[in-house]
Image (cartoon, rainbow, N blue to C red; front, side, top):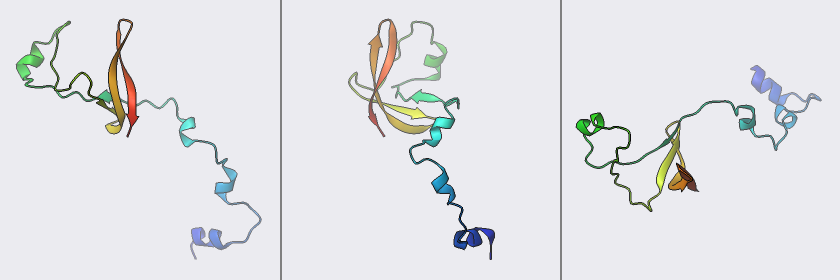
Length: 100
């Protein structure tokens, strides 16, 4: 009999491992330092390599999004929600409007 099966059928006085971990503890609380990549997907219309090479400070790029459209928010290429752009002081920010 394997150890895993034997341990499950053993009637010892030790509590199961699941009982030793507090139920309210979130496993993500132990890795707040873990880096991740946050990206916003903006579809750009009629954009060419020449347009890319011509980009400079102050350039304006037309997107296919309407100004009221929500923009997909991804973390490590996984869709986690939708956002909208907002101006805060002299900075451009995004507000999360819905979680995926």
